[in-house]
Image (cartoon, rainbow, N blue to C red; front, side, top):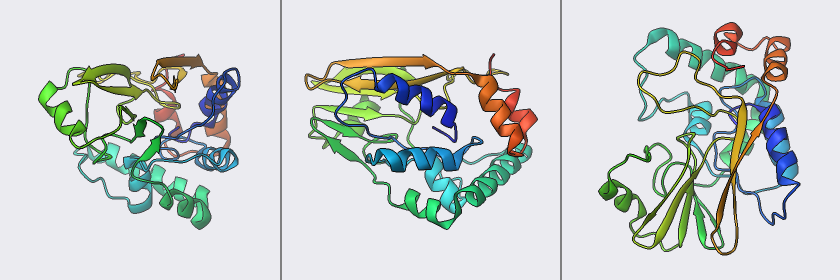
Length: 231
């Protein structure tokens, strides 16, 4: 969700139109957007299992981990946004994040943030097959569901299914150089059947509503952040 409850509501409304037995959050729920508490409150209402993402970790520790930021201005924006988000959540909300799990087993699907062993490793459609095989090593589940890279894609490796569900609240393409206006106005997730049929879902949401909410809450660096959204 990345602090985007407007997109989260859009995804949940779509979920209600389908016969879904279990919802699993793959992490990165609060950091980066103007509605961290709203996202946490929605997750609490759902009572669903949650995977611990790298931005959840950053929000708790302010440690950039394996993704150092060399751009001083960007680093300052990230830290100030995280500090604001921490204030919004309070200790109770931060404790909720601390309860997230490294992985969640959902039937034949192992749910993780980035890979089963890491919430920071980057696996993309163009990733070398050997690297993906290493990420799947010792995985007994028939399929792995991941988030982290904000893309929807699927690949089969040695009889196992690897798929990324996209992002509920912060969709963008992994282009280099990064697009000037990278964030796309839709919410993404995946529905998985008992037969491991994966249906990727993409639902539009009102970006203007999200930006209005950010400005009403005095979200840090709001003009810079708002300019990154496609209308």
